[in-house]
Structures are given as structure tokens and as C-alpha cells.
Image 1: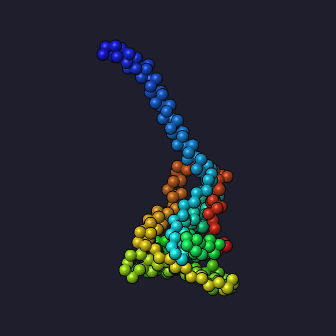
Image 2: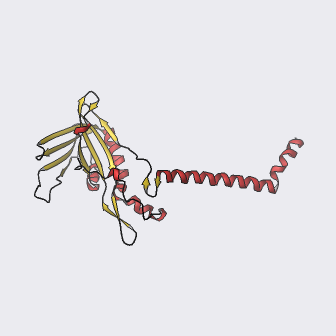
Length: 233
């Protein structure tokens, strides 16, 4: 026992203790640097090094529904600050089935939910209905040429919803309707995900994080890969 204590004694000397503290501090610094490097690799100078795709998909017999966020666009002020130039959306994509578990992605139709429309959707009760109308040319001479209507209706037994998109395009002579049944569990996922992403499409996450963010002059204000709208086809 005494021999063991004699062998261990150097580790309890002041110099040895300082040495171990130095090693521990060095390891901690390396760990912090690794975390910092990982963060920079994801977002370097405001630009994502790798595109991230994170859709929520629902596949049914006749229609596939996909939902994904579109971030807001920012512009730079003379003072150096940023302001939201265009609010983000949650993009819904409807694609028709062409066979068992096969869908025609080329014939997809899009509907971009505004923040207020997202609020209406996530606040639906089990017996509530909501309906949204979009007209891209509402304030021009082409008003009414393209109309999109999104409708959410509850099941009769209250266990889910039917989500329908109607598209009338008089320019392309197209009239389509997509209807997909969404279970209570699937709608719960949509409600939770939409609630989480709502502050992000408003740009409020950038506002709350600005004190810890170093915005550089050459930093892009928006990822060009996520600026498409339901009318960019």
C-alpha cells in the first residue's frame, strides 16, 4: 500500500497539478474550437456551405403533399442593419399519383402559406374549416386569370382533415384539383412544425440572435436556392 502511495505522490505535487490543469484546459479549448469550426462549416459568412432539404411529406393513394419553409429575404440599410424585404412562407406542394407509390413531380402545384395563413392553419380545431385564395395578378389587368384555392375541412368523425388545392389557369387552359386525407397524427406534426418555423419565416430569429452575430459586408442576405414562389414555374 505504501509503495502505491509513493508512486502516486508525484501526481499530487503542485507542479504536477498545474500540468494536469494545463492539459485539461488545452482539451477544453480544442473542444470549443471544434464546436466553433463545426458551426462555421454550416454557416460561413452567412452562407450555407451545404444545402439542407427538410420537407415533411405525406404520401397517399392519389396525391403526395410536401411542406417546407422558405426563409425571408433581407435588404441592407444605410445604417448597416438589416430589414425584412419579403417575408418567408411555408410552401405546400401537391403532386398527382401516376401509379402505386409513384407520383408525377413535373405536374406539381404549389401554394405558399403566408405567416397569417400559417396562423389560421395551426389554430384549427377538430371541427373547424379554413379556406385561402391566391391571385398573383390581383392588382393588374390579368386579375382572375390564375386562381388558387386551398381548403382544409375536417373528417366527419373529427379524426383528421381533407386538404384540397384547386387551380384554375385560364392562360394555360388548366383546371386541376388535388385532395389528400391527412390523419390527426399527420396534422399534429404539421401543426408543431409550422408553429416552430413561424418565427423564422418572419425573420424574428435573426432579430433575437443579432447581438451574437457578426454580419459582414459581403454576406448574402438570402440563400438563392429557397426564394422560389408558387408562381415561379
